[in-house]
Length: 194
Image (cartoon, rainbow, N blue to C red; front, side, top):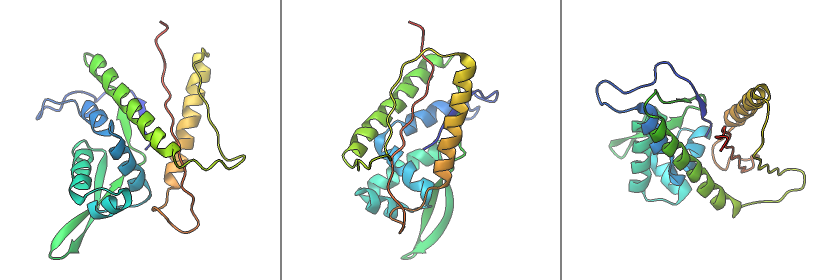
């Protein structure tokens, strides 16, 4: 999942629902299973049944999480297919999706929701570490709390964002012959000076 968090002059409450769509999206994303679903839907459009099989979930559970992601505007319907007299929707994650910052007055709520999202990343990283294949020269880890020039930070952020988008664009359906299963967990953010 690749989310670029940036300013949006259109951000604010939906006039019909009274809800902030960006806050709703953060809440939908702040769940480890939903992060796994987004990873799957990056490489291929999938039905709830396919998501359920790939992740070892019940069909009802997969459907529930897909509905939450769809309602938040995070995934889109990429088509339908007829199955046993009914219709099954295929969902896809748009890798160029942008999550915008909140309007003034919702910063505290947004901060809590961003923290929940990053905690979901941490939970998902723990699960993925159980599958770590330590191939020499093909793993990298960075953990840093640094003070840098704002221009350096801006350039670094842009480079990491582009690398993340490139990796997402290269994603293939699960278990495609000739592919390898990889992890990329990135959390970049500015910190209060204390």
